[in-house]
Structure formats: C-alpha cells, structure tokens
Length: 92
Length: 494
Image (cartoon, rainbow over the protein chains, first blue to last red):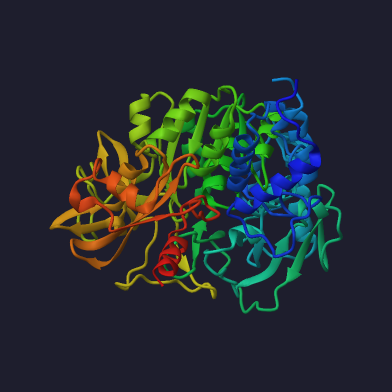
C-alpha cells in the first residue's frame, strides 16, 4: 500500500512552499510550475539544489533513489512533482 | 603557427585513447589537437596579432577549452574570466574592463550554441565564437612576454588584474601533475571553472600534460555531477569544499575515487571524514590567483596529515619572512603571516589600463615576494594554514584567531557551518561576530548557541554576537563571501 495519498498537483503546491523557504531570489510573481529549476528559470544554484532535495525528503518522508537524483527529474516543478508522487505511491 | 609553445601543447595531446568531454560532446585528444590548430590559424587569418590582447570569457565547455589552448599555443595576450552569472554576482567585485584589450571574445552559451557569432566569427566545434572589436581599446601592451591576466577573486580591496607569464604555467602544471601522480589512465572530473587559477593551473593543464581524460562540467550542481559521474566514470575530481559537501550529503552509496582535490576554502574535519568514508582520499590544495598552486597533499600521506595540513610546498615555492629578512628555508614554526616566493608565480598586478599597481608601501608584489592574507606555519615541511591575517584579534591581551573560534563553533552539534569575523572594538578587544548556519533539525537560536559556546571556548573567545543565517554566502570561487557577511551584519545592526 502506498505511503501516503499524494497526487502530483498537491505535491507541486507543497513544493512551491518549499522553494519559497530556500534562500534564493524569487520574483514577486507566483512560482511557475513549468519553469526550469536551474538556468533560465528559478536559477537554483548548487547549494540550493542540495537544500531542496533534503527539504523534500524531510517534508515527504522518503529518500530519493539514486536513479531519481538526475537533472531530468528536477527539470521543472511539474516533473519533480511527478517523480515525488511516483515515489510516494510505491509500497512502503 | 610560429609560437614556440605550440609544439609543447600539441605534444601533450598525442595520447590516442584519452578523451576530453563536456555536456554535449566527447573528443579524442587527437581531435582536440586538430581543433586547436584550426582555431589558432583562424586568428592568423583574421589578422589578430599576438600582442592584440583579448578579453576572453571562458566557460567549462569544449569550445572554450579549444580557444583557451589556441590562445596559449599562439602566445597571445589575453584576459581570462568567467561569463557573468546572475546568481553569483551578489557581493562580488565589479569587473575590470581592461582598456588594453583590443578584442572581446566569447562563445554563445550552451543553450544557444548554434547561434551566429559576431562581426568576426570563429568556428569552433560547430559554434561561432564572437570576436568583437572593443570600443574602449586604447593601446596594446608590449608584445613579450606572452601574458595571461586573471581578475582577482579576493574579498577585500579594489578589483585588479593579476598578470602571469604564460610560459610559467606549464612547469607549474607539471609540478601539480607529478604531486598528484596523474597518469593517462586517470579520468578527471573538473566542475570548478577553468577560467580560475585553481581549475586552470591545478586541474586542467596538469590533466592535459598527463594525458588523462578530462570531463569539463559547466554550471555544475549535484544532480548534474551525479549524471556525469555515471557517464564519465572519473577517478579524480577537483572540487571546492562547499560543492563537495553538497555532493557528499546526497550520496546514497560509497563511490571510490583515486583522489579528490579540494581547494578554495577551509576543509572542515567533519567534511574530510565524511568524504574519506564515502569517496576515498582528500588532498588539500593551497593556492591563490597570484601564485597558483602553492602547497598540495599527496595520497601517500597519512589521513591525519592530509586532514590537518595542505600538504608540502610545491617545487619552486619557498617561504620568506618580512622584506629585508633573509630567505628562511624552514619557514615559520609558529603561526604567523605567510609570505611566499614562487618561481612560477605572477609577474605583478595591473589596473584596467595595464599599468602596474604598487602596494601601500610603494613596492610591487610579485611571485618573487608575495604576502598572502593567511596565517600558518610549516610543521616538518607540511604547511598548516590556520586562518587569515585579518582573523587575528587581540582579546583580553591574548591573540585569538577567528578561524579557531569558527572551528570550535562548527563542532557544536547542530551547527553545520560557522565563520567568525572581527568587528569594532568591544569590551574584551575587537568584537567577534559569528555567522552560523544551523542544521534544519536543530533548535538553536542565537542566545542558546552563544551559551553553548561556553562549553567549547574560553571566555575571551565567546563571540560578542551570533547571527544565524540560512546559508553561507559564497563567491564564485567557492570561498566564503566575507563582504556579504559584513553587509548582512550591518543590516542586522541597523
């Protein structure tokens, strides 16, 4: 049975809150879930990426498998939300 | 090409099975060699003379590496800098726009690699590098010796350029390669900028000279590093401590490297131990933009020695005491400001017009007599760096090193990082201001953490003020941005 009921949309909303906790310069506009997390988007640097991963793991109470620690999984908030939802749906 | 160094560089690129890679391409050394020759010839065809200084913005991509090697092969004067990064701009120094540069040269970013170049385009690996005539150009520098200018990355003082002789880069690189024991069987990951002295002089050029395969990583972050690690399978890595910390925190399983070189800032004992458990030997490197690599550890040293010291001085480096004092081969036995003589160090500082910059006492600094901003000592030939010159303050009549205080606070459970700066005069002497990053799970506030300091520090070393910050501000070089910390302190106090 899955660890928690988390669809991708809910996860993205929680992710937006986590992003706001990071020490990064965000504009006043709402965070766009299709924006790139790195260059050309939210501009998360090396440190912020590491912090975000640790925040996610604490918030959602799971550990990313090594295969998910990839630029593709973290391309946008939407792709990241889907990866997290996929992990949460796995049996405990 | 008529440059005398061309053959020297091209000889290094003859190892047939070695490759150099970036995020988009992989080239055999022989292909790299051919690309370097093509680009060097293209400069000739465009009428660019070797004394026409270029302002070259270089990133960690293969086109940049090819141009960089072509410039060195030609013996072309050039200023080497990184492309501007919005995220790294805060707190840094204003760039010097050299008026002695006749051209500006840059490569389209990776995302726009196929975009057309400027008025003078140079084709390099399918990209069109833009060679723009600089409207601010005033006059050329003397033609010889071929110079490489690097902007200083220091955290204090005015922005200036460090002038190196290109011919000295190669013996210095050979010394690094020998100390590290690099061979053509090594596969070297370089996520640090090759536009900085660390990435260029200690990582990129030594790897080339050794015939090691090279993976250049631009805009590195842990996720990209892991992806490249799986593909390239490196045996050696050059990193900064803060980047390494990000990597180590996210590692799920150990992954052994033959060695990892760390430079740019102090490596904490905690990071050293975590890295060694996960990835194998850490070698500290000590150096500067001015001198390049100055001291470096080696794998054969015991872990305790590698943790405590930055290794032995490299060949050609010696320590000296104050000007006028005779050279002292043994160096300081107790911590004192470190001064070096480096046979392959810089020629001097230059301002934006190419004019030499004198020190406050009227002398000209160079590799022959360079006062570092660090304090340390030599122990049985191994260099131990204990902090910065401006870290030493007098408290209760005794000297206190800010770095020592920071080290003690950093050992407190729940504190991941600490930096201590000297402030204005306070009751015990100059104030100690501690900037601390607490672990997310910890419950420290400034008052309770200051109380906890009493368990690990004598009274004179208790910081007058503790500021908890979410993260330590870093310069692009990986060093702590002390100006940003001071700015933060000023804001907190206002």
